[in-house]
Image 1 (cartoon, rainbow, N blue to C red):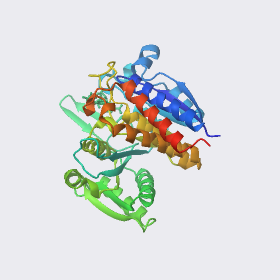
Image 2 (cartoon, rainbow, N blue to C red):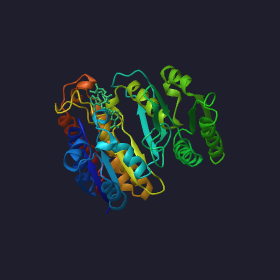
Image 3 (cartoon, rainbow, N blue to C red):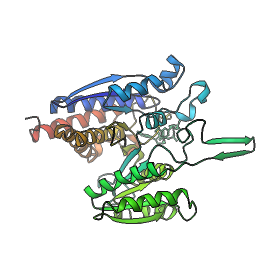
Image 4 (cartoon, protein in one colour):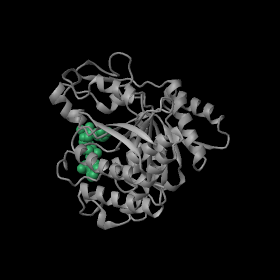
Amino acid sequence: MSELKLLCLPCDGIGHEITAATLSVLDTVVSELDLQIFIEHELVGFDSHKKYGTTLRDELLVRAHTEFDGVILGPMSTMDYPSVSEGGRNVSGGFRVGLDLYANVRPAKSRPSIQNKATGMDLVIYRENTEGFYPDRNMYQGVGEMMPDPDMALSVRKITRRCCMRICRQAFSAAAARRKKIAAIHKANVFLMTDGLFLECFREVSREFPEVQTEEILIDAFAALLVRQPEVYDVVVTTNFYGDTLSDLASELSGSLGLAGSINANAETGLCMAQAQHGSAPDIAGKNIANPTSLILSLAMMLEWLGDRRGDMKLRTAGRVTEMAVDQVLDNPDYWTRDLGGSASTAELGGYVSEAVCGIAQASAIKS
Ligand code: NAD
């Protein structure tokens, strides 16, 4: 019997709505595929700040590490958080570093039914998640940004061999199982040491995967090439900030940021966190009009990733069925939310995906 214990953290803004829709889909998957998934809800973000004086308690990180197989995290209203000294911790950064979830996996796929600017795109970006320019996660003590005086601000970027090697290895493994093509995105013509070290690691790992065809592309050129020939790329590996930016570009080219799933994972510990790519969308929060697709697809990715890692076919199938159900729903404009030009509510879209899960599971008699 496939068993999982998941920690669910709706967080801020549209987080509660899209998490509720995602959990309704998970309920259906659990009953259709006869899985055992236990879910515990906890507070992070503003809900946690109100009750505990901090947006993220250390205790939750410890529990996520020791008691759970995976985390479902909603989006944060980071821009509105109070300062760190007043309890405004970056929840996502806290989990990524606290659980050492070094691989942020962000697929972007254009669908014929959804208006997009990237016909034929089907790629996945492997973004390093635990260092780089991000000041809340690149220092042992202190933060990677400082102001020597009120008119000067400095930012430190940390790139390590260990982190470059492990993200490259994950990306190459994925490429070997896909179209056997990988592109490293960098700016080593200017950042000679930091991006230079990243490229050195990319080349070293490439020797372990002789069957994978490699390409090295400058980030500025890649931004243009992604728009010009999106169908060419398969697996893309890069450092933290470049990956963050390029994955939003790729998702938007595929039709909407609201369609973009992602996981944060550590292949060695087996921990995984499903997290939508977009933010907390305060402009539409509480209106039941947000598109929950991104978080539902993130859940699908997490189930498949956990299934792969444990050799558990049922979990793997659960992920695949969820993704197929989303694809089916997105094929029908009557089921679209407002961001895609439709009028379905967040909860309705979740309901349509659940119905599609039932249809797929019953048609293929998966349970038996
Ligand atoms: P955003 O992604 O929240 O919103 C950008 C635009 O996309 C908005 O018009 C919004 O309505 C729309 N949008 C986003 N998700 C949608 C969905 N699921 N369905 C329909 N429309 C959707 O970015 P922002 O407005 O720049 O940031 C808002 C807050 O989110 C800020 O506090 C920011 O710091 C935070 N943020 C958090 C994360 C995260 O939690 N990982 C990521 C990015 C931004």
